[in-house]
Amino acid sequence: MSLAIEQQIKNMLEQHQNILVCLPNHPSTDAIASGLGMYHMLQKLGKNAKVVAAGFALPDNHKFLPKSNEIEHDLTALRKFVISVDVSRTPVDELNYTIENGKLNIYVTPKDGYLEARDVATSSTDYAFDLIITIDARDLESLGKVFENNAEFFHHTPIVNLDHHPGNEHFGQINHVNVTATSISEIIYELLDHIERNLLDEYIATNLLTGIISKTKSFKSNTVTPRSLAIASHLISSGARREEIVQNLYQTKSISSLQLWGRALAKLQADPDHKIVWSVLRAEDFTETQTNALDLERVIDELIVNTPDAENVYIVYELINEHGVRNTHAIVYTAPYINAFDVFKDWHADGSENFTYLTLGNAPAELAQNTLHEKLRAVIKK
Image (tube, rainbow, N blue to C red; front, side, top):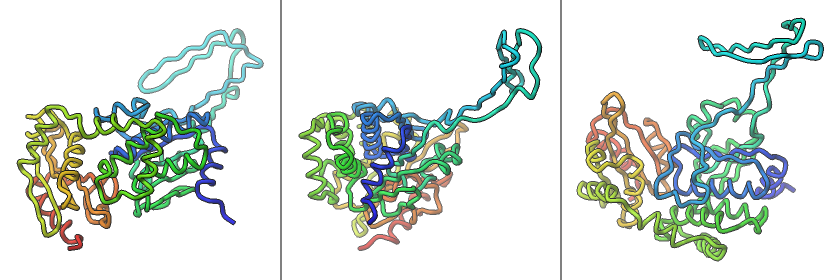
């Protein structure tokens, strides 16, 4: 009889010591919080762990999360190149190096005699990590540069794939994809409960409750289940700082973010027949309010929470690149039955099937918005 998936993961963790936790590009609050919860759990198990997300920049309202400052934005030094010199016959007197014209020159001065090419050998160490845990990633490509720059490492290292999206491609050696879970944090909690429930402490509980609250919009969304409520209750009784979570996610807003929120509201439009709400922001809206694209996630959250009749919400916005060229982007929140990766497959997409970041090229914002809207309308159930 096959082992339960949680037991398989427990066995895998017992067999490996150096573990890398990978978050996707543009990780959601749920992905960030659950990744930190997993990271802290691994440390308590005595593992050498690291958590990474490509190009990661921690949002200001996430700085309260325990260990949030330990998320790395890239992956370096996975293997070391070793130069071995046989000095059994010729002891070394001095060792130094220079870097010239893009080349590393190593100078070995023997005490007497001389060294020959046959005395030198090269090799590589093993990878720094012997196990990978991916969090909230539908495929390896969604890890961005972390995967692209280290593809060989990912193809030679066992992967535990944790997700709750139905579009997951089951790319791991172990795939724990629970589509009935409201959040990845819920999956991490149940895994921890199976491995060793005494590991749960205030810090892990705060991270996991943050993920659940963000995913359920503070328990206001229709995705809330009795199981998610029961888990949240247990996390609070285990020390999770609920008030601090709610304050940071929903009650603490800078003047600049409020100004951006006001501009989005002023331009708000609705398609009630298809339950769509949207807004279009210009590059000037960011420069004049001293905000950036990261602030849009909070705007989207506000629209979702405050427009309960809207099942689909999106913001089309412009950014000016380093060459002064305007490019159009979008953040799209879709109903649970819609896979935005499929709907918008012609555009570069990051995130998840239901909270997706799109790059629409240099098309004018209004034209891009019209095209996006028609694609979305075509798949909406009325």
